[in-house]
Image: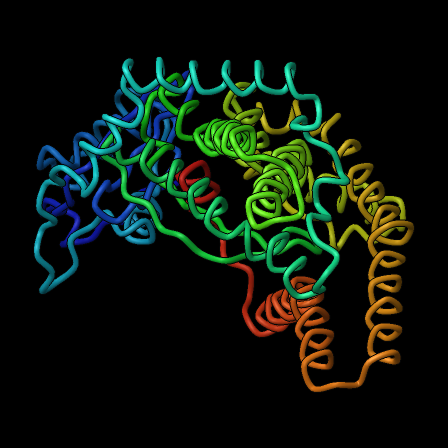
Length: 413
């Protein structure tokens, strides 16, 4: 590549305050105020430091050639910086240094040594209670805490999980804010599941050893919720009265949390354990690399080389792990598809049969409302998941795929 002379390249480039994190053979560079980051090779990061120090682009390009013995396309490099929003545009103010984020002190308190001691006692007490009263241990029969109303049963199973789901995501957010990171909460889809997602983009600029707690905070909270619900049920007498129903409701919610905890092991759906695994393995975007690797294998098998994805943007570690993960990932989807066909759909059919039978025996307004509400509460998730999938498919058809910041930074460096 050659450097294109330009009068503007003899003037310094204004950059926003940047953060640098060196790990292995890559450097994460970006803006903490908007969580925009890119991966650069060490020579690219050094070049960026020179630009940030006020060296004009042409002078920085000459320095790069002298230092590394290669020509650099400075126009392309600056284009990468603009895509990452690192360059101060005309009329734009330089970003102010980021200060303490909201709830940072609360995050520090929630994950302090004293708090961990309390959490340990809580879990130990719950385990002791389960040993003394075996009926407190998680069991699928705990889900059916009442048979008097379909709606009451479904509200306990479905809507009763909403506070614990939000608490799970809040734990992720607080663990991140403890490190001074911003977070956002959104609703998304994983195959045929609807999920809440906490985005902590700033984790890429945090040393790897500090990323584990924000990733595991949600699962840790799930364990604490199960323990607290179990202890709450332990102090209530079992029976047909209100306290008995409350006891069974607490155990029902506890078992549902156990199911969500097990769901985290479906790491190919990009669960908490997936992000933990790629951090431990030193990967950056394993899921995308594995998908593209599978696509390329298929296209080559079908002798369609024109549809093979460019592999130059893959990180070396992602490429190594994807060689075996790309086979494990579709196996997981096959397992979930089989589960959908053999368990989820038959269960849905059975629930519909139960509702129709109940409706046929009693057509009173109260019973009709009970049955219809029951059906809505049971089938809203697959319907919403289908809608999100359709919307994503339509957006994919109307928008051209964009090069990711990570791929661009690698290419420019």
